Length: 447
Ligand code: EPU
Image (cartoon, rainbow, N blue to C red; front, top):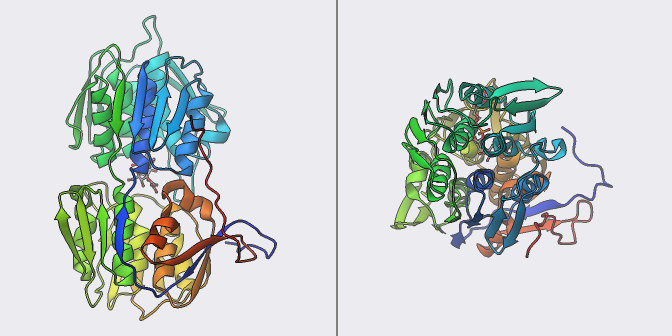
């Protein structure tokens, strides 16, 4: 891993740690719902309005993918207006798909609408190889002819009526993306599709509710068996994305790691059961102030605990890095086992640069609590790793400089702005001067 040269002017985050935070945080819409709802909007040949869409680089990029397919998309405040009537292009551009894995999920709706889809393989990413075999096998079971040639997945529906057929599909692993791809494809298929060993994540339920609001017939989302009865077409919709449970979790850890009381809304507490249980095990209290508001009340001491990431409702892999940052400061030892992605420990070396004591073997990390962290220059290796470094920086003594902010901007809606409102000493500056405030978030066209 390389740290940047003195000439590198990419923005960095500068955090002066050791300050208590206080106040309320407004939680944005869920990234992983918004992205898949945008893919799902391709199913509909009328107007779609998706509200509570977070302002993120990944959302802007997904917007570019849809535009490249002939879809009209505009942003008005927190809403996206999407018109896929004139969906014309069946091939997604490699430059975009390679940057955003979620864009592969358009394969299901594209195939269902046009009878043909050509999507470049998204390839591996910083956290693992991330194959798409489950998506492909499911589409084949529904009658699609799928070939992979020259790095592109070519899928088409043979026959004259160009409609997928309902099928009974058992997923070898409850993949979130494969469940979403197949659920979307099945909404317009001929007959009934049964997805067994389906993912149960809240974002899968949100997608099912979005499709149902457009007239799809889906039951069982949120359980491991989802049944979809195909309909000939879907109608227009106005729908709000659920709150981002990973953003909530990240702010809960921000409270615990800086020993600060924070109040967060809107949240769906049921989406955070595993995260709240682990915070309690560490010695913090999480109080439900209203049905959609949580308060973190940190304990006076922080205990170690063991964590294993699992598909929902297990402990989320997307919170693993943030909890590792927290456990570096616990009084005991902890073991974290990452079972969902094979390479999601990039933050370990960086946390160790800040004085943490973490050793890894394979997908296990052993964390010995230390009394304090010290600020240091560090590099974010992926989205959740960057959040972990921000959290560590908030608690550390002295100044932490975080490089690689493009990762953070993919998935957190104004994290530093929200932390500043809580009293954090955090600012985005040009890489070498440490002086000018900058903003680097790409902007989607606004109407
Ligand atoms: N997998 C396969 N074959 C497949 C699909 C998945 O082997 O065809 C494997 C993956 O390689 C991985 C495991 O199954 O090891 C889980 O992958 P899954 O398909 O469930 O994840 P995903 O749909 O690619 C979504 C989120 C991730 C989140 C995971 C797990 C989106 C856009 N992304 O990814 O979010 O970690 O589910 O909950 O929904 C993040 O937000 O930081 C992030 C990485």
